[in-house]
Length: 87
Image (cartoon, rainbow, N blue to C red; front, side, top):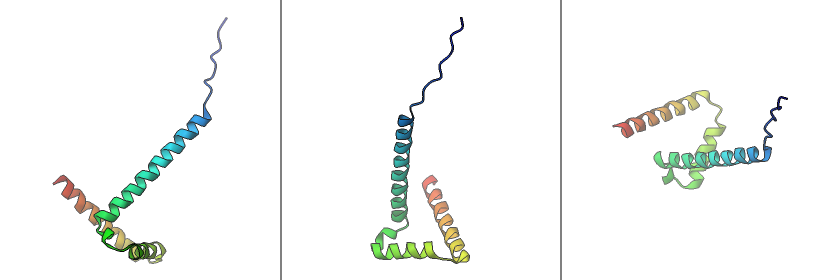
């Protein structure tokens, strides 16, 4: 007489709650990192309207060349910061 192994019943509510908690934690971390980025670049010295306008212009920009120049400048910024942190 072999006993059949019962499949473990999944608690979908608990899994959904855990995923929701993880999503909220990731959103909080993202907002924190964006705040740190604004501060570390010195953009926190700008008034909010100017900062928002600059970000909106970047989002709306259709120029691939301009976006690539910004990307290169940002990459160089992070490389310099990494060297300062290590050195």
